Amino acid sequence: MGSRQQAGILELLKALADDSRLTMLRLLNEREYSVGELAARVELGEPTVSHHLARLREVGLVTLRMAGNQRFYQLHAGGLARFKQLMSTLEQMPAAPESVESDDRWIEALGWSADDQEVLKKYTQNGRITSLPSRQKQTLVLLRWLATKFQPDTLYTELQVNAIIKAVYEHDFVSLRRDLVDFGYLRRERGGGKYWLAPSESEGEAAQK
Image (cartoon, rainbow, N blue to C red; front, side):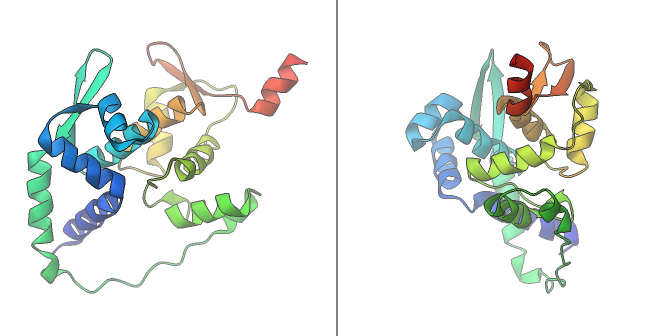
């Protein structure tokens, strides 16, 4: 088994290591669902469901169909077949290489809370995101950190935003870009032409005084 195949298996297993995602896959195997319909079935908020679906789409297990402003998802038969094929090669996997020690001094330098630092230590290594968390609270910590990569009072094209995100996480930069906007860390010009860093609450309060 090559290193690319091994990396593919690891990404798939990480994506499936969540009860909610497994439930969604089972439902999507029955029929196509919109985000709202899935949210009602699994009793989660739509932003959380969208995050889970983006992760499953990232590893090729679900597909997206747009109908106006609605997004519809279904199980990707080809992605499921690929997962089964990769799993059949597990016996050929080589011994795991020694882990690379992560330098976390940059995390400590942020001066964030101990809980937030633990999230960054868990999901990053040497300044790069290694995987995306399944919990929204942890995702928000990563998004908050990603927002520090952008300069205030600066306009960015979509290509520039993508490049900044891809510098720390290449796998699903589109979903992260959308999350940065949806959760209020970046603002986007109508039509998506330009992006800019949203002012912090303290800056907004100062501007009002």
